[in-house]
Image 1 (cartoon, rainbow, N blue to C red):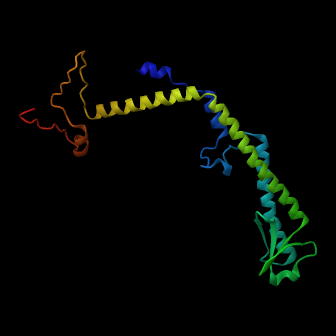
Image 2 (cartoon, rainbow, N blue to C red):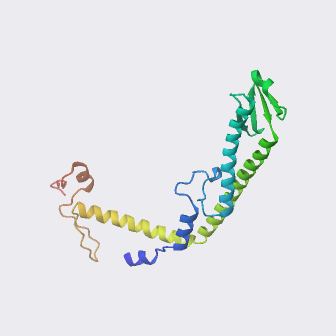
Image 3 (cartoon, rainbow, N blue to C red):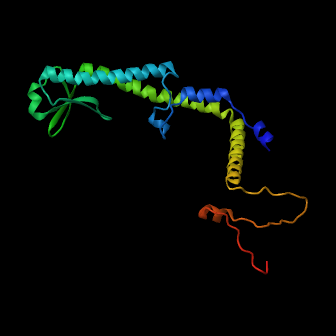
Length: 216
């Protein structure tokens, strides 16, 4: 049996190397969330991630610069799916808003604005993030297709390893608990002499042989 199992195990070094190079160690449960593909696997993806990260940092610095320029200390740059990035200024500070601010929305307690510079960085960030999502999905599909090409060998290996794992577990238990190897013959009889009860033994921690009744 061990020889048969060994003949049905395939190491598949190319597939193993592909997965190690392409997939992060702890990918998210939902691949649509992104972050599945490892850095360094695809040059375009690395560049897009760099743009996204640097653009966000620049927008954060832009917030600090605008607070200094306008003197509005509670000025904030926010984001939502409807308006994208915008500058939010409380009603009490509207008089300090520079002329280059373009109003986008009026709220009960605040005004929302944008500027040409903020629009430019918004396009870079959102464009990069959208392309990142598309590219990750494409790359993951390519990787999955290559792995699926070895389905037969993967399933064969899985079955062989599962069988080997079960055999190892049984042999380890037999060794630790000093089980007796049965003697096989060609007849139909099964004779058990002083048979131990493995489940009871495991629970009480001692050898256990059920008492035989006189009529047995």
